[in-house]
Amino acid sequence: MSYEPISLQRIFNLAWQAFIVERRPPGRGPEGCQYRTANGNRCAVGLALNDEQLDAVDDNSPLGRLVETHPEWFDHSVLALGNMATSFQYRLHDRLTLDYLTPNGNVEYIWRCSAKEMERTYREAAYVYGLTIPQPPVTQSIAGYVGYVPEHCVALSPNLA
Image (cartoon, rainbow, N blue to C red):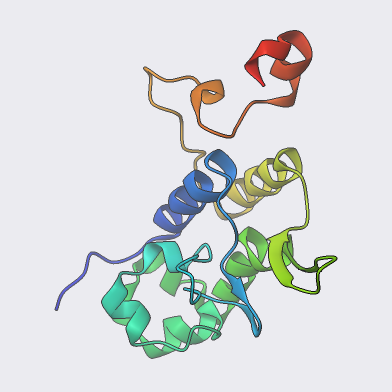
């Protein structure tokens, strides 16, 4: 089956939408970050892979190894990074997650930083990798996204929260 090659920009856009805008939970399990977890959560790169691709890979392998074993899945922007593609994956997802032991003894996989810190990290990644920040649709403001109200909006208008 043929696929549209996955670019760094596509990975970034999907991760921005899922993690910055929608604040979805990370793709992390007992063995660390995963492309797709048992409950369906995905990491930044996992968001760009379809189910057939995900079924063909080890969920814990770094992006650099995935690029080596399946170069046909990626475009030049990812291929040019080679094994260094793992740094991109780490920056957008892996280093931002945390295992949290709840009081009842369960482990939850959460973001280790605030939405504001995550957005700053993503903006830095966009700068480093020469990517553009996705813009919200013209008809919808950022404050209109479910679960996302910029901190300065809350301070100015408490009824937005």
